[in-house]
Image (cartoon, rainbow, N blue to C red):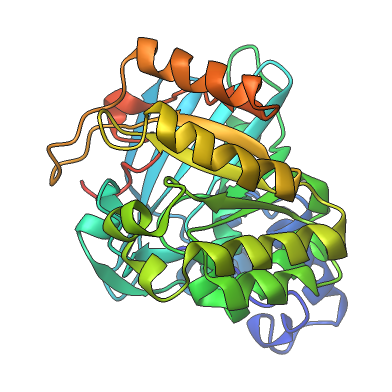
Length: 339
C-alpha cells in the first residue's frame, strides 16, 4: 500500500484522541514525511502501531539503483495488486521525482513500454502524492551522493497520461503545492495532447509547467506513433498549448523522442520549427529508449546533431535530454511495472 490520506480529514485516523493529534499526524504525512510510523515520535506507541496497518506501510516491491546511486527506481504495489513505478533522479543542483498518475496507460504510443502493456486503473490522489512523500522520506534517510537532500522538482512523466486522470491529478497538485510546499514552477505535467485537459489546466490557480509529447510534426506520422492524435489532431493540440501559454505565461515544452529513420529527418525538423516558434516553445529531444514490443531503434548521434542544427537554424530553442537509468528500465518510455 502506498497512500496519503486527505490532509483536511485526518481525524478519523486518530479516533478518541485530542484534536492536536490530527495536526501531529499531518506533520508526519505532509510536512516531514518518514518511512515508518515508528518515526512519528510524538504520537503514542499504540496509535503508531495502529496507523502502520491503516495508513503508512510504505512497501516497495523492488528498488533499483543506477548512475552511481543518483537514479533510484521503486516499484510499488497497492492492496488490489496493481503496480506502479516512480523514479528519483539526483543532480548537483536539484533532485527530480518522476512519478506516475496511472497504473499502466491506455493510449498505446508505439514506442512506450507503459502503453505496450496496457492499462490497469487510475491512481488516486493519495497514491500520487504518496510517491512524493516516500521520495522525501527516503532521500532524508539516504541522501544521494553529491546531490541536494530534498526533492526540488516533480514531473508527471511516469506511468500513465496525467490529463486522462484529471480530477485526481488536480487534487494531487493542490496537496503538493498548497500543503507540501512544492513550488508550482517546479512541477511539470506531461501530456500526449489531451486537449480538454490542457485547457482545464490553463485555468487552474497554480502556474505549473506543461510538456506536450509531440514526436511528429504532421498528422499522418503522429497518428501512427500516437493513436490519440486521431481524436486530438495536431492543430487542436497546438491551439490548446497556445491557450495555455497565453493564460499562464508559462513556456510550453515540446517533447520529441528521436526514433531512427522515423521522425529524425530534416523534413520533420523543418515542419516542427514553425510550431515551436508560434508557441514560443522549447523543444526537448529524447533519444528513444529500448522497449520490449517495438523493433524501432534510437537515432544515431549524427542524426540527433543534424536535427538540432536544423532547428537552431530555424530559430528554435532546443536541448537534448540527459538519459538516466536506462540499464534499470527507468528511462523515458521504459516504465512498465516489471518485477
